[in-house]
Length: 406
Figure 1 (cartoon, helix red, strand yellow):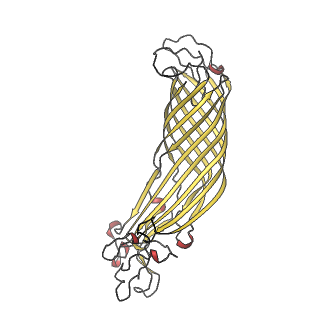
Figure 2: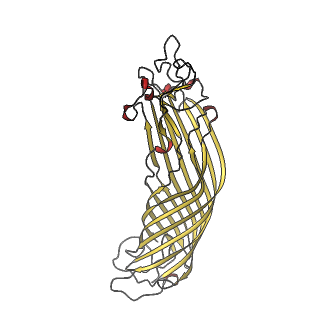
Figure 3: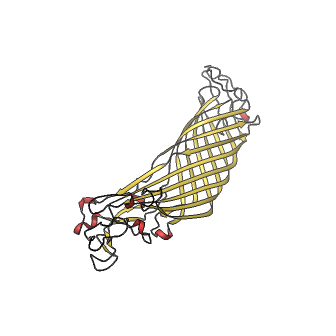
């Protein structure tokens, strides 16, 4: 009997218990015995016949954490009026880094996801297929508060404050009127002006996700009784979506907090890539209903890069962040050519006729993508975050799934 592969590989032989006599090979390849026992009441098709198939997989991937090492906040505050030091803008405190962009989380985190595929096999062995893979977001977070390491707040508690060099903001972001001992009713307060100047709490979060879809064709090229080689070609879509989030909360000198003392900054980098791929695969029969395969493809993409950054808050409107608050926005669109190389190594198992399972490891590499080198642009009136080329970006991990043909 003839048997076909699901997932875009050539079917390996299923050796029945007792080594039954082989029959004609699928696409000139492995001898495949009739797998008639056990009989399971599932709507699978007759092995070796053309028709539709479908599969579902669970994937567990990890990807390069593409963010720079920008210093976002330091310990201390700026004497904006010069009341304390006699020099407006003079910094008071140690200036020790309190929050940097890449201190969020560890080097990587696992991203669970799924891959779905549907296709059709012709009686010539050629098949067409479409698949879609999506991962859930990888989330990294970090924060800094008024309590430094070792409770070392420095002279006059200056290091209990957090400051970032945000400038060119409007009065909606001035923060509390009375924040430090320098703010009095006699001088009218606002001697340490700005939500980001002498803040009490700052939190950052970075998230990344990956999506891929293929519309492809697999065509047999060469086969023996125990191996098969096939060509792969088609169109591929890939999407990297990175988001950076920064929340700053300021308090007055008696510990009160208000939405008017809160500011949020976001930076979104979306890279949608459209391209074509070509490659080849090789599968080897291992016996006892098992086989192994290796697929390698190369692709060239047009990368559509969308950068969006925004400050919001200020407590206008109803006083809530992102709902009536003051905003400043930045946007840019650019294009690039991104080469890519992918590889998949799989072990296949054929428990019953019409059903097959696989366990594998995949790696997708991309060259010349963008990343947030300096995710925060500190000029509120003309936001200027820094993006740079990521020479090499890798997505890799394990996959396990099951497929049926009908």
